[in-house]
Image 1: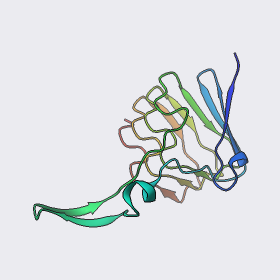
Image 2 (image 1 turned 45 degrees about the horizontal axis):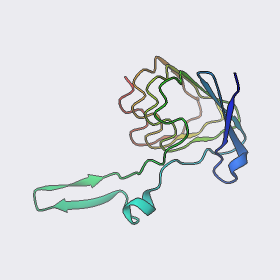
Image 3 (image 1 turned 90 degrees about the horizontal axis):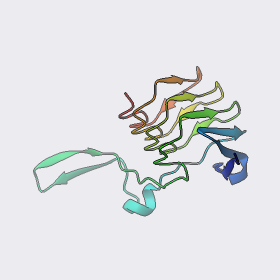
Image 4 (image 1 turned 90 degrees about the vertical axis):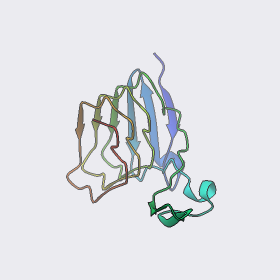
Length: 144
């Protein structure tokens, strides 16, 4: 079976390589993974803003726009491996990957972006880094 590869580093695209081999997606490199969301272009720069809607609802909203990845909505992807050296998992990185059952996150990861694993409802196990300093909004929403 041939593997598929994509570049997805934040600073330089080729700093992180994603490799899909069968049902396993592996990320290797030494950098931050790019964010797969684009708040500014979709919402004109509004994020984390307070709004009043017709005087009926008042509240704080978190906006993000999901930028599709080649593996989003994947129905066969079962395992995600993030290798040592990667320091950030990007916003919406695995959004709607509903078949994912296990995720390995190394100690080099310090942050997990917004909605990174949102709607990955079949996750049975996830190994989190001991060094994680921040987990984004909705990072694991609908995962259990």
